[in-house]
Amino acid sequence: MQRWKRRGTWVRLGGLFACYLLLPALIRAAIRLVNASDLGMMAFILLLFIAFPLITVALAAWDGIWEGFTVLWTFLPLLFFIVPMLIFYNESALIYGIAYSLLAVTANKIGSLFHSKSHSANSLRES
Image (cartoon, rainbow, N blue to C red):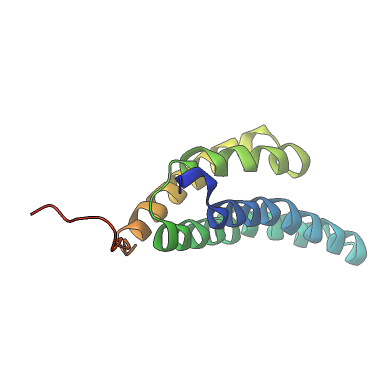
């Protein structure tokens, strides 16, 4: 099976995109209910510096362990971060998307070191 057709990677990447969109939306809704703009700014900063990097690293490493290394983790976290950047942040937050992509490709590569490759019983081994 080709690497691009595996569902597990696409599910994890979809989860990353959902986290990038849903977490800021939930925080913005909570800010409007409480009317605390200072708390909201701190929450958005915590998302940028703690939550998003942790989620990105966890999903990329998980995918590396289960599926092996893939090039998708080099550019898709940045691409996925552009939409919430335009909605919730400004263009100065683009550097964080680049950092998330670097974290993702590093975590995916480290996770792929622990990926166990299954051997087919139908093919002959070279000696």
